[in-house]
Amino acid sequence: MTQTATPTRAPVNAADVRWLTPAQQTHWRAYRDGTALLMDVLARELDEDTALSLAEYEVLVRLSEAPGRTLRMSELAGELAHSRSRLTHTIRRMEEAGLVQRNPCALDARGVNCTMTDLGLQRIVEAAPSHVNAVRTHLIDVLTDDQLRALGTAMGIVAHALRES
Image: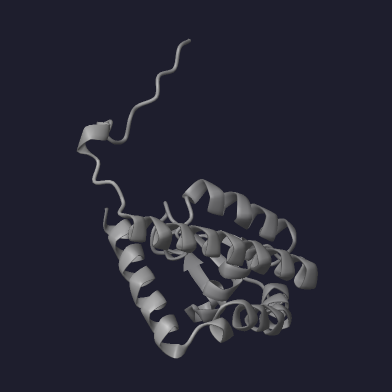
């Protein structure tokens, strides 16, 4: 059986590309490299200090902020900007570790809720100080308040545009 990929976007002709200016290229590369290095160090330090992955930590954060420490899986995927399949794998590992539970949604039989367990709450309470310190050390304290505000505003716009597309 032959499987063909369905293109999601039309091919782009090189003659039609609006190439980056030298300044745009410099800023793009700085963003790309800074983001990759930041996420790598945050992931490594979180794993070393807490044995949680960044994805697991973010799931616990979102659940800890939700009423009843519960969110629908689809809502959780949207908030975390993860694919549903990636989130499902993360939640499966977390469920096996006793950090979360999945249950059918009472309001919609097709929906599935994810609820943080008491153990999950304990883990996020223990992990948060180390992670917040790492975020502060590697990002917050490196930037001025104006730079941090500009970064947050810019990335909020990018996230919104991507979610809308």
